[in-house]
Length: 331
Image (tube, rainbow, N blue to C red; front, side, top):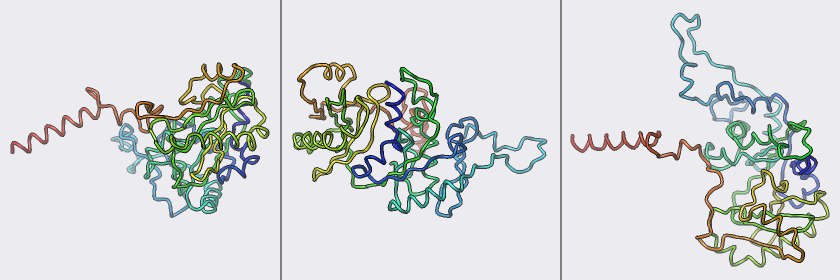
């Protein structure tokens, strides 16, 4: 994989060319100060100081482990709590507010390559839907997966010369509440030939797409031939699409072939082998029974929230609850 192949998959690079067949998106170049804010993991978790009265989120996310930050030590000259001032990005916030309004009031954010899917658990809706600058900042700052974009995008390149892109961009994509995850598909292109299609959401079994499999394969093949193949310069890559119930195909994303891109219901070795075999037909894979469901590739919440092993926080919580129940029963 080459740096130029990775660069072509940045949303600010491909979206202008494929705007007519994608979902509505507004892209903003991020100031370096905001990029450094996303990278800062040394101090307390501060949300930007908002200039809007519409944002209800607090500026500081309180971490109990930082309790000493809030305690005035004996003999201190200051009687007030010592806290770091929240950062402010007024110009960026105004641009984002205008974009959210023009996109209907709800968006989901992503950087050059990645969306903060791993931090959706922290939002009030449990999704990536954002209606304000503070909500976007919260998702971005809470995401571990965005560290890839910020620090490791070129790590798998054979000709690596860059440690990071020269600029970072925030793409705000229109939020569609009616989109159904089972109708998203990842398509694998090798030597400009569509060799594989995989259901994107592999953690569930959906009988409706099983019934519609032949039609889905046909419309995705047609979309690749008519809209993608002659307009995307790389020979090897993947692209994600959404297919509506009426058969309209919308382009969602591009990703490099291999490396950090998930092969989903395939593995990269068999995709390489399939691509090298002459006359091989397109392999279209979906979860065809409840037995074919795959476990989640990433949990949507921190491990501490689901760890119930002995000695964990949940284990201690359940012990305390049981003791309290027994105490009340004996009272």
